[in-house]
Image (cartoon, rainbow, N blue to C red; front, side, top):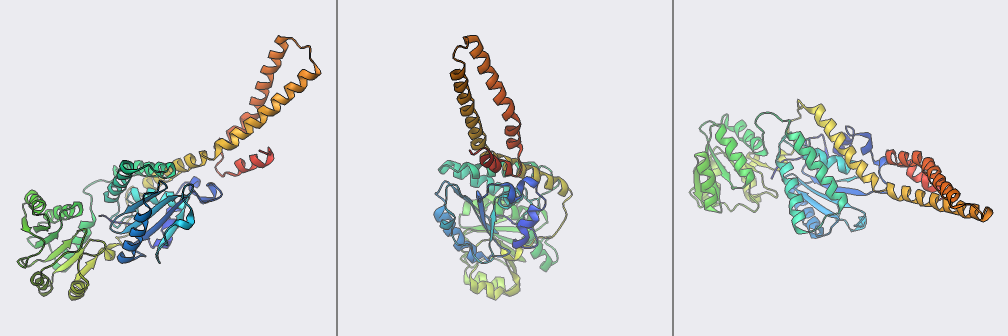
Length: 411
């Protein structure tokens, strides 16, 4: 699990991202109709339960070559190459979701991979998840080149970006501990419960140990809890909750299913004023326990808004996003150029051959040498005339020259 966008709102996310992107990324530079679509359900606009429903609908379509799904704690994102999938077959975007096309969709994923759309700016958990999503997809089935190329460009940009972040990298677990520390005053020598033993639990436990807390790990698989606790000098509890959990200043829950809390343990959390941060999506705690904890229960959605900070390398990151987006869009546009160039070349060649046939009819007694010289001259003439138009088509950033070529040359 990990964090997500750190921008004013989901509706302005795309425009904010596109405003820093190379002109090549503006939608007008793409094909006349959408090539790429991203449906984004984000914690800032779509609650966890609705994201879970949307995720199930996306996964039901995920076997299609033209679809790939990215899912983290805060987001469910469906990327679609419309060349192989009809728009009308897409799942309905939940209220508060965002539909992005072409330039906006490309820049969005690149920003995500670079850590610029995270509650913890610069964290690398989402980059890992994007990488893992693509790797698993490659193992299971083919992926449309439009999507494959986009993810490769985004991952490459993400790797470069994260090399610029100096110092210890914070994770969403640090944000959870900040909430507990705010209530407890300090984490030094405070007992902290970590529920789960996955990657986010490990990051949270490590961060808690660095802050001087006394860490207890509980997990359904006892060995995993003992391994993690042993690495940190903490304590492991066999089983997730059996009524013997001690008092804790705070608890962080990061599991993929519901947390079955023994009634005695639940009562102790409530009575002791424990702050419980649930990093699971959907929440692992029952609605009843959430209600009993009141404002001491903090959900994953509550953490969706990270602190608005300016990164020291902000300018470099924006240029990286611009360059990476331009690279992808040039590749995408190039997929539309060859037909126009080829059609123009074929039309010119047909006209050349027609003129040679006319000349041979008018001057039938030409020597073989003269015929060869005329043939050579006609090739050079056509190549010279087409050189500038073909070069312009390859460099055309607006796509207007390609459309004009079809009309002017009657291709």
